[in-house]
Amino acid sequence: MDRARPAHPRHYSRRDAIRIGALACGGIALPDLLRAAGSASQPVRCRSVIQLSMGGGPSHIDMYDLKPHAPAEVRGEFRPIDTNVPGIQISEHLPLQAQVFDKLAVIRSGTHGIASHLPASHYIQTGHPQSRPSPDNTHPATGAIVSKLLGARNPGLPSYVAVPKPGAYGRAAYLGTAYNPFNTGNEPNSKNFNVASLTLEAGMTADRLSMRHSLLKGFDQYRRDLDQHGSLAGLDAFSQEALSLVTSERAAQAFRLDEEPAEVRERYGWTNIGQNCLLARRLVEAGVTYVTCLSGGGWDTHVKNFDELKNTSLPRYDRAISALVSDLAERGFQNEVLVMAFGEFGRTPTINRDAGRDHWPGAMSMLLAGGGLKMGQVIGETDSRAAYPTTSPTSPTDVLATMYHAMGIDIHGHFTDATGRAIPLLPDGQPIAALMS
Image (spheres, helix red, strand yellow):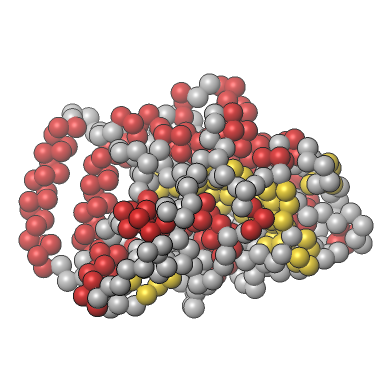
């Protein structure tokens, strides 16, 4: 990645630009370039991100932006309760988060204009709207970008992990396969959870595996000479990381969720979202830089919105988030780890005939915690129906810019492809000033 506005501008020749572009397309990380350009302006406090993907679109008006004085067909069944921050109220079905709200910040004024799941998901995961629908990323996910620029904090660990698999548009696109996430595959909440790709097959030792890898590299060299597009460079990097992981005791240790005490696992909840978040905490503590977790579904509430939320989705989400932020703070990682939780849009202010709420990008709530940001606040407000922001409208790119800024990444940077075409990290957006401590 080439900085568009470094602290000390450097002029590149056309040859330099093409060379750097080729490196970007070939999947070579450039962390030194990043740190040289970005570290002079501010200290980097945030070292890892845990992103909870709430695919489907959680109902902001029933969680963080209740409207108790609105008509019944708008306000719904839920009532607000006080949090431990004076003057801030959230849903009665988030009581555990209410007790730790001083460790949270909620953006009530999230907004964009895409009401379809997949295009909105691509936007929220990458910061780039898709020009046309695609089943795969056309721009890299934030985790892939952070992985490319910063790498893993400790050797022998992946830099980007998806638990148990990537959500919609969680892949690396043109950055190459080396920056796709490492997947656990199995649900951490499953019985006898293990990560099969971290286990050597019977009779295979680490030394034998390394010898086999060297032999394969020799056989494959002639293909590298014939490769016209640089795609094999990404595969090489991917293979090297895979070898490092399968022979790394540090990696194996990080994924051993069964070593957590029973009371800790209970604290997070014996649910997919709870155990996903607990594993994410272990991973960032060990040195993984970016972890995405699936939330277990239940947010696309076109039918029986209130039954689904109060009986299933909100209790397990409430327990997992409150446990995660409290656990990180107790372990001294509150400033070093940024937690983000959001879906691709909110839900309609008016309840439909099926007691549900439909897609609504006009307003959405987004939760952040830690990362050295200013907590214990809500940002922005919506109108009396929670339909549109009335103050501090915040786009998905503003939220992603805030995350990149916290990680010490220049939001004005860009990638350059082999033709010399600059692709911005973000097309727009600025860090949210109210979160800057």
